[in-house]
Structures are given as C-alpha cells and as structure tokens.
Amino acid sequence: MDVINPDDPKAPFGLDGSGAPIAPYGYKVNGEPRISNRGAKPGMRGNGGKKAISAAASKTDEKRKEMLVALADMFLVTPLAGASLSPFLSKRFGERQTNALAGDAVIVSTFAPSAADGLIVLSQSKPGALARLDTVEEKVPYLLLLQVGVQMTKAFIGNHLNPDERLANAGRTLASMKAAQMAEEIERQAAELGVPTGVDHGSAQAA
Image (cartoon, rainbow, N blue to C red; front, side, top):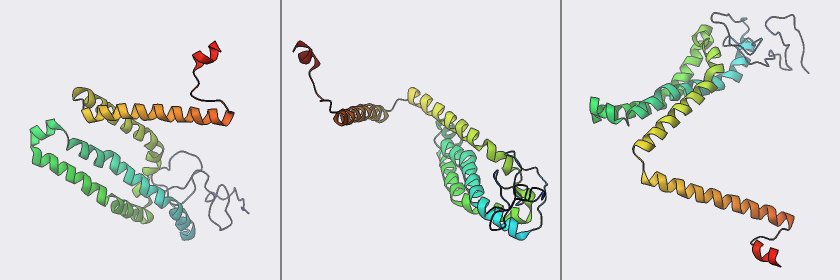
C-alpha cells in the first residue's frame, strides 16, 4: 500500500511499498520525481539518497538509452545513409567519399548504444549531463513525425523524377492484394450472417 507524504519535497506524491518515490510524471535525471509533465530544469541537484536515485535510474535508464539511440539514428545514421545515395554529392566529392558516408552510418549505428550507456553512467555522477534530455523527450514524437514527413517527400520526388518499374509493379500487386483482402473479409462476414455469395443479382431480381 502506498505511503502518502505530500509534505516531503523529495517525494511529493508519496512513497510506494518499496520506499521509492512515486513518480506519475517520470523521474528527472537526478532521481527526483517530476512534479509535472514538463522537463527538468538544468542544474537541479539530487537528494543524496542513493537508494532513491538507484530506483529511479533502474526505471529510466532503459528508456533514456532507447531515446538516445533513436536520436542518433534520426540525426546521424539516416542522414548519412541518405547522403551516400545522393548523385549530387557523388559528383561533387566522388564515389569513394559517398561510399565512406554509408560506412559512417554503419559505424554510428554500431557504437550508438555504447555511447548512450556511457552518457547514462556519466549522468549518475553529473546530473546536468543529460538534463536537457528531459525537455527533448517531449519533442521526440514531433521530431519523428517531421523526419517521416521529410523522408516521404523525398521518396515522392525521387519516384516522380525517376519512376522505378519494380516499384510500379509492386504498387499494382499491393492494390490487387488489398482488393482480395477486402473480398475475403466481405465473404467472411456474409458467411457469418448466412448471406449467400456469388449471387447473380440480375437473375435474382428477374425471378
């Protein structure tokens, strides 16, 4: 059963059964519960309680790692991989260098999880190291939507500038698959309702 102690600024929502502060809005990088859904302020200090900080870290470190890796993919891996396919950059800097950009994307993707682990460990002794991440966290969904929009726009433009026959055939196959799936679903619903399928409506009306 939760122990409520709203007068304690280090546990404004009380403590849970294990003695860790309840945090409905998540934790700040210093281990304290957020008092709202807004990001933590840079420079805020922890309460010095190792148990509380460890409990908070265990709940947030995995999420922070996923976020850091996603940001690395968004702002480094994807742009580098995309740049390696650019005819303009290939002509400007040479095929060798654009190939190197593709390799850079693989390198960043490989080492991003380890770099994220290092930043998280650093934040345990220096809470300000990832303080800005609390404010970035709220913006990540919008950044992801923006990235998807940009990539879709580039794909549309590239498709119309240089239509691909395989992609066109794939689109026609997809349309046929969707039509077959719709027909199968209608037939399934008709069977459940006892409605016959494949009826010649013209002959049925004449009869």
